[in-house]
Length: 326
Image (cartoon, rainbow, N blue to C red; front, side):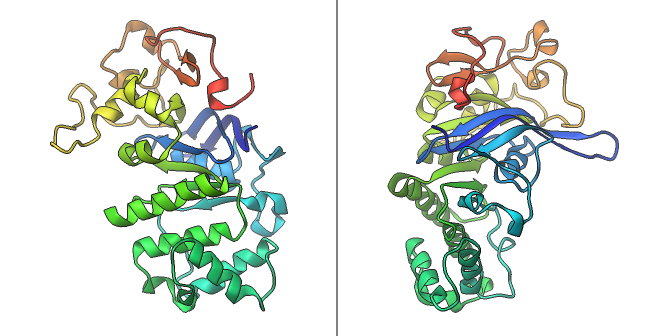
């Protein structure tokens, strides 16, 4: 049974001219102990979806369910205790921590909010959390500026772990780090999934990292999921032209990886998305029907679905691949 499920989720922000529909009807689900990769270009709606998943923004439409209970956008202290086990790790570890407070005090606050004990036991509990993420317990007396970027992100993970989470939504958790720190933080999150059964939504624009860490991968484009499936299958046999373009653009050791010349332009304005398939203005395989028909996810093989008019129709519109019951 899925631990976190999004059904028909939309997120719309007011704009200067017209509303911006950042997330345009997403079905997604995560199983306990699974690492789900969520990839796409900047501006595709990944971060907006992440915030909806953890209740930082309220969906304009659709629902998010965590551990069989609806997730609501509530103030921190009004949040149900059970939903505190749904945690988020942000992209910038420095801005997500309070620069004026010792990291130990910040982790201790998270422990108390999660019902993890009072002030007397806080130093020992904080030290144990820092050890879990590979840091010296004595570091709890330091301020955020006294850590490296990778260490700060480990502190952010330790703070999330204070709530004994069932799910961690990690929004670009390694993009601000150097290569060695990226590997350390990615391995830390994957280790939580493998050894402790924590479900991880790993959001990134770096497909090479996602290929290494994710069990399944969902590809977003302009607010929608255009393909989802087991990571290995998606890499070996991508069914959506956008997925293939992303994979082709991943750098290779010999330097041959590059953005294909036949994928022009940038992601369109979400306030004025194209008609029909949202990818069709940039698609190298575009047909006349693509501008008038909006494709839905269709089964390519068990667990693998793509939303493309040219993808083989091997089944009905697919909801099982997202984990959402049909």
